[in-house]
Length: 84
Image (cartoon, rainbow, N blue to C red; front, side, top):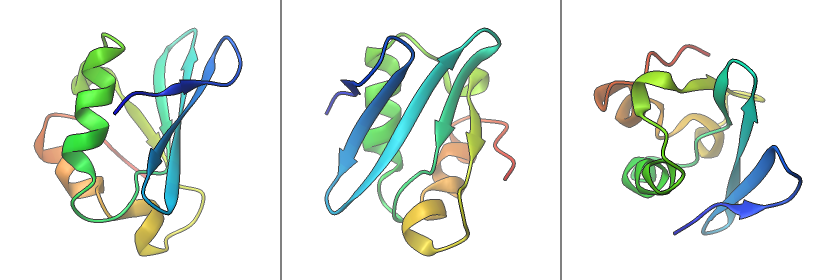
């Protein structure tokens, strides 16, 4: 799985019926939403493909439904200092 480039700084990753977005800004990568439980490995693989480390990632959840924060603990376990 890879992020699909939408604009020069914004990409989308399709995770089944949900999506997450990667904004590559001046201060590092920002993941917008993080899918369902079990989506963590897919997100991490796509981040590595973009040459990002979990430790550099910031995460923003648009709201607290499970399909938007489900993989948060998986990303934290991989080293992301994720805070919603």
